[in-house]
Image (spheres, rainbow, N blue to C red):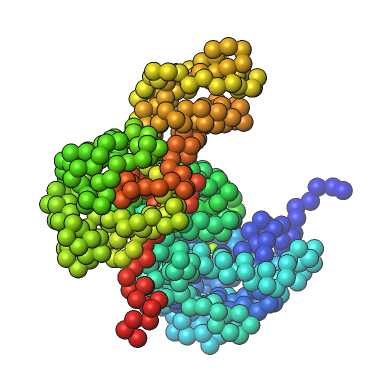
Length: 602
Ligand code: ADP
Ligand code: MG
């Protein structure tokens, strides 16, 4: 065959392969055109998942009659006219090929009334033939009707999935547009029925499109480090997902799938989310268009950042900080109070809590808390303590809500008892707090260990010697110096025995062997710690193992004062709402929920 230039229609059909792979892609292009035209109302009407018919109408500025044919011509656009424009593009479209591509693979009618025109005009395209413009009854804006997608390219049509699947993709595409443009009204119709109409306003739109549950678990992200800005919502791990279906990232208003950003977010969640769960977020990154290349892929869902490292760092820190700021940590800090002693010092409580709690601690509990820092480092106001103390001494804990000004009750309240030896029950101003004591303590320990890196070391008077497998012996020899950095000294004392000679100061002696074995197992299972992030990641895994193995176990009896000490610690701890595995550590049950349960006042 000799070389020949391809016919125009075929060129467009080839181009359509990249831009319009299914109805949802056409919907996205058409809605983006409406948004570029300044529309405030956009309506999508679909038949058979958009395959039989896809119609987008808007109230944008419209197209003059003289430009209707051009709009359907390949490489014709009103949005850029030079390379310089492309480098600072503010519109969603700029390639001038969407309408031409759609027209090449469907039967298309474009109707439009330009804002300065008296009447509307329409133009029809089929198989590359353009009919001359004819008058139309449209009263404002533009409407694009796409019929029978891929009717002339049966091979492509065969790739389409069921009506339900194609509709789902279309709905998702419209949802993305609606999330990014809360000031624009959107309507979705399918088979002649209204599916949804998106309400106005960012918050209500997110609640409506992503659900109440997402919104309740969502943290507000607002970060600006010129010229970068990030805003939106990131859900706490309580609302994590099995798949990535709730990850919405927008760069300058454009929905993108970007490995770099996804990685930054994954990292931001690493500490609080189980590795098999996916975080949920809706985040908008804005930056000057010169700093991001949007012309990477015809579908424009990929971007390239001029300084990708800076963007990664910025997004990571913004989200990590937002997730770390535990609800209580972000409240006003509590000033110092001096209590003479606390359960965390391992000695008797003399004044902090009512008499019923001043019992001697059992030896196991004492050991467990022995190395915790004393309660006196920074707590809720002395006055509040004393007031609470007096009330409690007079009438017991239940008097809290009636006699004590609610402002004086610490956020997680005062302990009232233990349930099933697994949960701490506490009363605060809103009602009942239920704490998973192991999970909560694990998180408190973990955060403390991380802060103290490299950990303060406590030499053991009597080394803890245990018999070790060949693998454990070998692992211990190879990671000795790394463990030492974490405050843990493990040395061989014979060919078959290891000795723990020192421990991080937060870990109780009784846990020495368990912790040492767990760590050696971790190292053996995960020998690769080469890159910078994976070293930190690895160290954090190690600290997490340390925390998990030294945290209070289920079935351990705690005194009220120990429980209160843990509650106070949680209030001071970042990320206290989840354990290291991403499970929640506490829940609130409000009085009104309990009232409702007993049908009070109904
Ligand atoms: P691009 O959006 O990249 O410019 P398109 O093929 O999507 O290319 O559209 C071609 C041109 O048609 C646009 O530049 C715009 O001027 C015009 N146009 C398309 N859709 C609309 C619309 N809904 N309202 C007003 N103008 C539109
Ligand atoms: Mg376009």
